[in-house]
Length: 305
Image 1: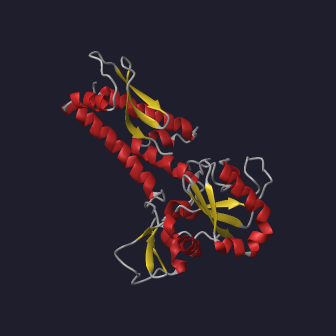
Image 2: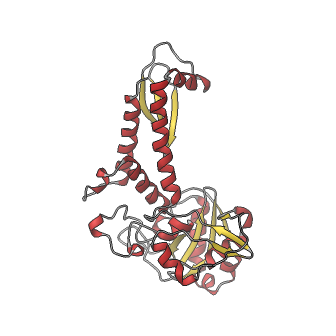
Image 3: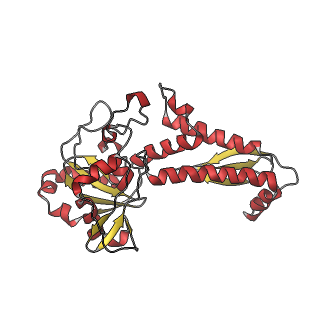
């Protein structure tokens, strides 16, 4: 295998991502580096709730609230959609269809950018609109009160119904107190309290500046998944760097000791023929190489879900 196939693999990933992101009249996306494109892709994907059957968990605060009584039929419908693995996108943010905002069109305040959801970026908390009436854009009609929730691959945690309160500390307290074993947020082991707790009114300007803040709850300090200074989820930036690093390591390995690649493939149980012809390929969300002789597939990286 020669190193150009790694370039082919990078180009394959790049083109697939650009296709999924869709048309960009500004032309800015194609001018980005490979890592920047991956981070943009990951930021967009983080805002989507992937359809999958999930176990539903409703907080005691939600169930006891007057808002739940008012909106119960819609909330129960959303919970049922989540349980069945149906698409929740119609209930999501009005901004969900904005994948990239050209630099010249970006507002001065990051909170106003339609290509970012800073509550998702910092804490991974989504909001859903409480309507069943579809608008022309494929989303339900926006509502003043929203259902806030955290989604994991197999579980959905419904926090409560609030207004457009993007820095409400109660969201984290409810999660921690209702589902302590779910570990929705990382508990810091280096401290049980914050020497200078952040005032609730300071969280919005800090978040808008790309700063990740901690929160003290019942004698414990909790850390969010975190955001970067650009407002992207830290996990998206980290995954992008991992993919770039994996391809770089693979390219270097091919240069230094190409026989190791054959050894890796053989270790998977695939019979390696004397004659080999490697090409870049993908299977599902996994990208790697296929030997067109043996048909063996060697995965290298997995794209963000």
